[in-house]
Image: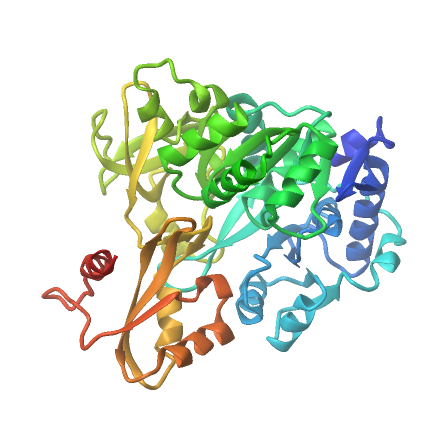
Length: 500
């Protein structure tokens, strides 16, 4: 089934139901949302873009985002959401790898894509959308459950992003599991998009569209605590996705300014580790509004969940242990802890978190080698290490990969290292995560050579997204290595710990 049928079904009996707000202003009903999506589909169809084709979205958080997303799905195409914080060159590479026939882009970002030589036609949503919305409509096209719906690019240890193939079945499974295992959604709710729509925040539009709920876009286009509190008061029953660092900032600002969080119904925290002390403080201030979800691009938001009762409960003798966990397996998947060969380990033993089920990807886009390494006998090897207790609660302990999580965004060291090595006066470079009290981790770079830190900083600004660039550049005579010549990142982290 085409996931976009959910929008069509809501619009049929309830065309006047409020659908999208920009701030406090109603800008689309479900009737107009559906009509514009169908017009986008008709316009794409007239250009020869249809089932199986890819359409890239390099856009800020605006109402047009959801319209063109559903328009592409109506046409039977797959969407390629691109993080709006990426450098134009990074975004262009994704469009080329995906073979996108067309990209919708926000003003400024469209020009950056064009300058970087992006694949296919580029549509600047700041101009010309009225013409597209006046096109002949096309209803949702039939798609099989295994057909590609969303091509999500997640950075990998090879330094280049990998395209995760997300099917219609996966999205349906994820959305329905959310309502069963995490939090039911009703027509009276409102989804607030203060985090990028290209990631977890955006994927949660699905269950809100299915329920005919409202979608609220902050005028700032991003995360602003005061704006969030004001919009929550105005709209009521607000649902939002937040990285742990966002939850921490909201708690600090609310306590400082006397905000109670009135109007907030559900805050889903995910995207990185949440310290127990931070979530306890948040619950003490805001009350029982928190839900935790654990997933990754390869199993989007669909591995485990910790419901609001478990987050709030303080009566259970092991409530702190449960709060430190990421919850229990969601209904459509199996989760277990295994060794490197995928052999199940006993309860409580440390190993790699494995998952299989309808929410797990079929593989990486045009990357059979990476697929073979990640999918083992039907099980997704997540690369995350942890253990499961006797009650089925899974606790993350560390990561087998060297991924850095800063403010909920994933940063892989090698892609930063490759940029640093572009400098002629850098012979070696190694990047690790440096603990940060607010963002979780910062990027720290160690290098061998005579380059000045300001030169390296400019090099990073010219080639990768700002949030990926190192906040610390440290020149060393040599990088610590083992007998096989592999850099010992544990030793680099020790140096940072000694500095602190």
